[in-house]
Length: 537
Image (cartoon, rainbow, N blue to C red):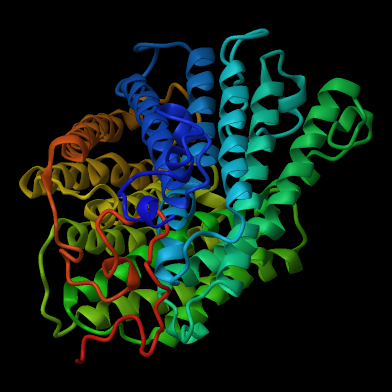
C-alpha cells in the first residue's frame, strides 16, 4: 500500500484497478472522497434552493400576483425547505468536513466503518432522488411546507408521499453517520489524545452524533405515520378518525429542535478551530467550550415545546418550556464569550476565514437574542407565525450554519484541494453576501412585529415597504453567492498550487499532514503530547 498511500487523491479502488473515473468516486470508501461527494452534492442543491428562495422573494416584492400564484408559491416554498433542511443543513458540516477531517484531526487513517460510511452517502443520494420524483409525479409537487403538518399532509391531493419517504430515507444516512463518528472518536484516537486533548471540532461532531442517533428515529417513525395515514387512514393524527394533529407537532419537534443543534453544533466547532488560528492565541476556556457543547446537546432535547406555545398546552408546560428555552441559551452565550476572549489581545490575521467566523458571531448573536423573544410567553403570542419567526430562523439556521459552513470551506479549502483561492474575490463575495443577508432578513423582524404572517404568497399593502427592501437584499445576497462559488470552483481547478502544509499556521493534526492528504493520512500514527491549540511555545 505504500505506493498508493503516497499518491495524492488516489483511492484504494483506483490503486487496485477495480474502478476508474466516476465509479472510483461513488464506490470509494476513502473518507476524504466521501466528504467531497457530500460537498459537491450540497453545493449543487444549495444553488437550486437559493434560486427558489430568490423567486419567492421576487413574488413578495409587491402585493398581489407578481410572478406566481399561491399554489406555485406553496410548492416552491415546500421544495426550498426540504432541500435546505434535509439535504443541506442537517447533514451539512458533519457530512462534509466531519467525513474529511475527523479521522485526520484525531490521528486515525479512516473512520471506524468505511463501508458503512459509503452506504450513508448512498442513502443520502437515494433519498434525494426520491424527493425529486415528488416534483414530477402524481397531482403536482407537494405544498405542505417542509414540516409536513397534519392533517393537511395526508389530505392534500398533491404528491406528498415521495417527499416524506425521501426524507425518511435520508434519516438513515444521518443515523449511520452518527454511529460511525461515535465509534471512531471512542476507538480510534491517536495514542496520547485523551478526551481533553481532542480538538473542539471533533467534540462538536461527537455531541451531534449522539443527537443523530437518538433523535432521528423519532422523525423517521413520525414520517412513516404520515405515510400510513395517507395510504391506510389509521387515524393517528386525523381528527375525523379520532386522531390528534397536535400529537404530530409534538413528535415532529421532539426531533426537529434537537436537529437545530445537529445544524449548529458542528458550525460552532468549526468557528472554535478558526478563531484561535487567526488570533495566534490558545483558545480561551477549552473545557468550558467542551462542557457547553455537551450541555447544548443534552438540554436541546427538552425545549421542543417552544414551537407550540399557541397550541393549547397547560400553563405548567408553557412555563417549563419557556424556562428551558432560556436555559439552553446559557451554554451558547458561554461559547460567544470564549470566542471573543480568545480574540482579545490576540495577534489578529485578517483573512477570509476569519471574516466569516467573526460575521458568524454577529449574526448568531442576533439569532440567539431574538430567540429569547420567541421563548418568552408574553411576546411569543404576538409574533408567533409571523415574519419575525422567519427572520429568527434564518439568522440561526442560515446565518449560523451557513456562515460557519463558508468559514470552514474557506479555512480548509487549501488542505482539501491543494490550491489557494483568490483572496480578493473571496473577500468581495463575503462582503456582498453579508450586506445582502442583513438587508434581506433584518426587515423581516419589523414586518413580523407589525403582524405580517409567514408562509403567505400575498400580503396587505401596509407591509409593502419592508418587503421591497427585503427582496432587494435577496438579489444582493445571491450576487455574493455567485462570486463566492465562482471563485471557489475556478480555484479548485486552476488556483495557485500550495506546497505549504500549513498556510494558516494551525496547530491541529490536519495541518501537519501532506496537502492534499494522502490515502491513509499518516505514514505512521502520531503520538499526542500536548493540547491542540498551544500557541505559547
